[in-house]
Image (cartoon, rainbow, N blue to C red; front, side):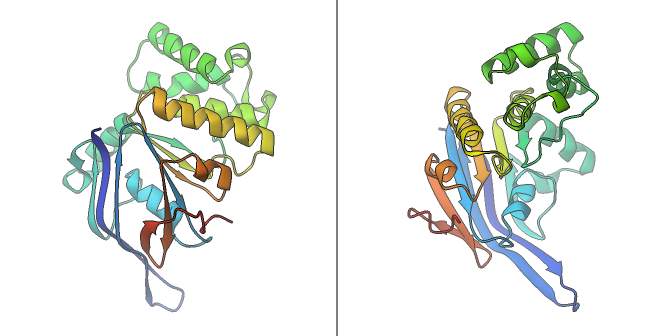
Length: 233
């Protein structure tokens, strides 16, 4: 399987309140291929969300390299990086971030319209994705008219609108009850295989982590294998 995401010797530092430098990530290495789901677990404050932002090119590392679809993001200026990120990465966060004034269909169409798709083509793609995530009958509803589980499934559909090879999810089921969380976990697992995605999920949920091909624990600024799910709380 082809490599979609590769991080090598990734370092991220922050200046603490006392003026001292804190290394949140200290030489992280990660490689993810198509069709593979990787779960990243660890204690709160370990740097999991920071790592996800770096892997998705929302932030730049202080040292090391991140390669998305064969492109080293260090070689891109801000505009080129944004364009490459928009083509390559789909994001799902703990909060759905759907635009409340638009319907589910319009929300999923949004990244396609921004990318220059025609209205008919964007609508066709968005309708197909909403049907795939079980929301065909809810496509005209605005986010406030959807349940929490429906909102997150619409967010997944939007993340996949451009057909990115990489899906990054940060605590995607953190605000859902057990049944809706399990439905979302099933969906993410199915879509990773069905669309040949490279998927990285940050989670405290044992059920979601157990579905991944690999579970990695982020601890002391580095990633290591965690077959026992010891980092999930």
